[in-house]
Length: 248
Ligand SMILES: Cc1cc2nc3c(=O)[nH]c(=O)nc-3n(C[C@H](O)[C@H](O)[C@H](O)COP(=O)(O)O)c2cc1C
Image 1 (cartoon, rainbow, N blue to C red):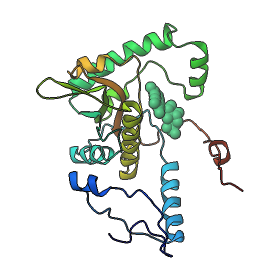
Image 2: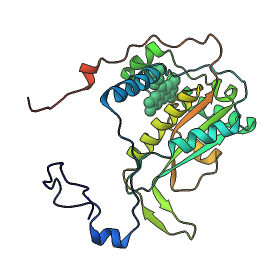
Image 3: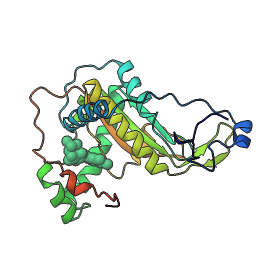
């Protein structure tokens, strides 16, 4: 066996090696490609990622300028690298640029949001939380943005022969894929908005999705309208979101 799992002084770090020889004989494994870098390089990299992530903002007015389809495909490919429970990848991204379909989605979303905002389906506490964002039932951006990318979670796996299998940690997995999609769109220089005109069952009907899929979130994607404003929000300080248990 190689010296994997050995401390420099030679003492075994792991009693139970992964994969075990039995496992490796049964299923394929490959060497993990990894280039170790020094602490300074890691600090530079994470600071540059943090600064970029901190510039991401949800935009609610998009430019109608077209965005090439390959950029949307690349963002979905990046998102689909997300880890998932039992590697089931329980998600489907539906990318819509067809104006008629975007119009149907806007119409249905505005109907749901009308009930939410104007017929008090959202309770007072929820409305109060949203007040500073100033969102309402008007969703013109759903037609103006060149792309609407609708992310569906696959509640269970539906195989081509009609049989089904369980999926695991569907929401967690799909949520991570959504986060990677947001990051990919932002990194390439486009803008988006996680949009949830709840209930979103209409998306399954409009987009003719199978019974195992449930809408998770949708993302209008495009260039921001020049000069667009966003709410002046502060993000929580590190000390508010991080607890370190370091044994000291
Ligand atoms: C799961 C989720 C659902 C959201 N749904 C909506 C929505 O339906 N409408 C909307 O205008 N913003 C929605 N947002 C965007 C949030 O309001 C926004 O992320 C938050 O105000 C912080 O702003 P930022 O994205 O610019 O950092 C949603 C965000 C998340 C993560």
